[in-house]
Amino acid sequence: MPPRPRVLGGGMTSRVVQYRRFGGPEVLEVTEREDPVPGAGQVRLAVRAAAVNPLDWKLRLGAMAKGDAPPEPRVPGFDVAGVVEAVGEGVTAFAVGDEVAGRSTGGAYAEKALADARALVAKPTAVSWETAASLPVVTTTAYRVLDLLGLGEGDHTGTTLVVDGASGGVGVYAVQLAVARGATVVGTAGPAHQEDVRALGATPVVYGDGLVDRVRAVAPQGVDVALETAGKGALRDLVELTGSPDKVITIADYPGSQELGVVFSSGGDPDEEARALTDALARVADGRYRTTAVVTYALDEAGRAQEDNQHGRVSGKLVLVP
Ligand SMILES: NC(=O)c1ccc[n+]([C@@H]2O[C@H](COP(=O)([O-])OP(=O)(O)OC[C@H]3O[C@@H](n4cnc5c(N)ncnc54)[C@H](OP(=O)(O)O)[C@@H]3O)[C@@H](O)[C@H]2O)c1
Image (cartoon, rainbow, N blue to C red; front, side, top):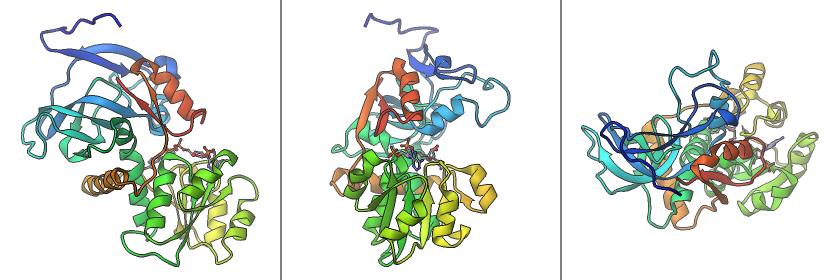
């Protein structure tokens, strides 16, 4: 790659992926910008890896916005792992040179990204950059929704949970955490991922029509609670299996949640998320968690990575490596 100019207006510059209007992957552009300056409570990271999540392309499509453009150019990406290279006022938890993972503020698809210090945790050296970047959104979501389902810390032997989308980013950690807490787990996945789900400690069933009967066949004791992570129309079946909308949570089917009276969970408490991510990284580092395969892309392949995620073309976690 030819050398790039490093000075625009006096500061150092670096590459970033951004979009100025909503739309397909073609709205993503790679551009050079001055390195962002961390505000109070923030750090700037030299990004080593940034993961792709479905929310990234949903936001790019403008699904949750009015109009045809964001108010300012927007940089996609929440999940980030990198090295602290500048600290803002009041930051005491991290120093320059620390290796961290967590959620960025203002976009992670970049060579340099900002993050609130409280949204970051230390990255164990045993965990690769790519894997560390793949964990924040999916693991903190998994921990939060298990708490909401009454499967928080403690022994849940005797409780049966169904995870719809058990082979997905959130699903694999929800399954493993619930199993570690003693629950019996039935996980739905496509035909190609049945053995992957079994390896996580769950009983796999194929998703789609007839789900209620297939789950009952492998869980004759009954289903206590259910988690819907795929947004593909299984919510009604999960209510039928548990007997009540109160025993089901969805993170992906907002219209279905409104129709059926199921809780739609989004967002979380930053301190709880930091605790969850720290625990997840420790379990990955010592082998208690199996991780999803990681597929890497360059920054200028961000559009292809988002398309691959949206259309389920590539299994595992998709990670940009700047
Ligand atoms: N509300 C929140 O806080 C929150 C947080 C994180 C994610 N999310 C949302 O949760 C969803 C999942 O995210 P993710 O990162 O886990 O996605 P992902 O890694 O792309 O996984 C999606 C999973 O859905 C499965 N799937 C495909 N068709 C299905 C069907 N008909 N029935 C059941 N499962 C099906 C796929 O299984 P196969 O590959 O085996 O076919 C795949 O494992 C996204 O919509 C995302 O936006 C919400």
